Amino acid sequence: MTVQELPGAAAYRPTPPPAWKPLTDPAPLLPDPEPYRVLGTDAVADADPELLLRLYAELVRGRRYNAQATALTKQGRLAVYPSSTGQEACEVAAALVLEERDWLFPSYRDTLAAVARGLDPVEALTLLRGDRHTGYDPRVHRIAPLCTPLATQLPHAVGLAHAARLKGDDVVALAMVGDGGTSEGDFHEALNFAAVWRAPVVFLVQNNGFAISVPLAKQTAAPSLAHKAVGYGMPGRLVDGNDAAAVHQVLSEAVARARSGGGPTLVEAVTYRMDAHTNADDATRYRGDSEVEAWRDHDPVRILERELTGRGLLGDDGIEEARVAAEQMAAGLRDRMNADPVLDPMDLFAHVYAEQTTQLREQAARLRVELDAENDQHDQHGTDDRGAGR
Image (cartoon, rainbow, N blue to C red; front, side, top):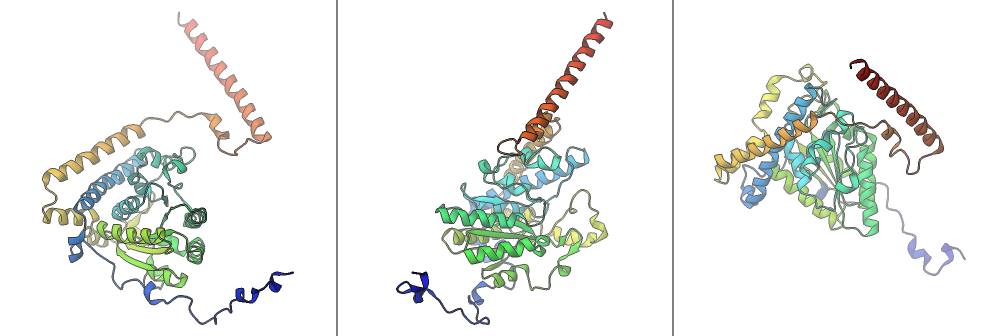
């Protein structure tokens, strides 16, 4: 007996809807016409003062972290650093909205988000200094490896979130990507799978104005990147990416929706990249100083500090306390990054396969013989030198 012949089988043969008929009412999915804001609006009255102060401390620390990491590239201690100066509100909020059991999927620019989630600042920079592997254990920290290829972390986030849901684990994945990454095929595939599977994942697009040197207008003709969510059947949210309180609120709502089984959300945070794409980029070739200066008036640290001081929640002592804590973090990062790492050539064969292949074992053995011979020769030369000096 085939499935078709089973009693009641006809009930399991739904008639497909006409191709023109939408599966979802698009109206509730559409983003607001303007980015959502909290600071400087009536909504700030409902914001938790303790949360605002914590966001402020993390923003000050994040700004100093970006400055110190950029300085390390000039000192030759980092091969490259994609600064998130100006985008700290997105980075910090993304880290703080997640529970310990949740996962963060960062791009190469999101080292600050990893640090704000609790990762050691040196471990966050290990990949960018050219050291081996990722620099940290993703499973321990629930932070996926920093992703350099554009948008390839997004399908991974969907896969993990979908797997967690199938297992019954109460886990949400938050995937971060830049506006340039939305032009990649991985972006489409990730959002499509996430919406169809109703995976508990939140996509945070940091629209910082440029994909390296390509402005947003040359990437898309959509009203906003948040509008792209409608085509996949998920809500799109548009938020002021420099308003830390607003980003935290919107992401918190999206995470709660995902955790409760409501499916994915696409959040576009409108922000601005104050520094160049990386230390290897000359941003003056594609944007003017006046544009950058205009965004400084909407600096995420400045607008939150202004709100807190205006409401009497932050005084000179609190500002100084945050600054001192940030300086201490930067000093520790600088001292530890200035120490040369101890490298073991045999690590070349570690973490390649769960069980080393015969070829790898043979290569490792040959290298060990060469290293031992080199060490013996070095020791012999040292003995001769000491004898000659007597």
